Image (cartoon, rainbow, N blue to C red; front, side):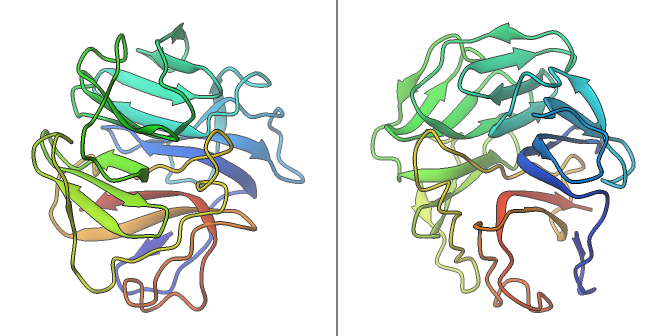
Length: 243
């Protein structure tokens, strides 16, 4: 975790987190594989932390699901473990219609509108995942998430950052220095793994915390963006919290 200008620090046990998201209340949800010495199943299913990542407990699907993409909203949580699933409470799940090769998921604050970065391009659903359509002219994103009701951000395989102000219908590249990042090699291979950008649950405009789930071959955070990061930091999931 990185807070303001303070040096980065590790929080919690060693867990290979794949999907990662932040709920409206600020709790953390994740999925992946347990580290040595952790009392979690393989795969961990949907796990939850209510203390900022210091400890984790299985919420559901322990030993069943390795969600490589997760996104939380007021409507619940959606996840992709080879099948697109949705849950109102994080415990009981239903299967949704799924676009192919999902790498990252983003849910609007109310959970009605979903975006999926896939190997076939950016897909959009305005029916909470019941039906999907390709977004014409969208960049080939591997990471995507919502900032508010209309603002969406994403990154492509080359690490370029893009922004949409109309709920993902049209996009423009962000020309700001320090927004370049190298996505994980896993994110660059459709169907293998994805990443998540977590929406700020409090809506404050100043970015104050970055949550990073580490992996041996992951995303390199740019020194121009995180000047206190001592070396390129590998990650498969990236989640942001402001405020």
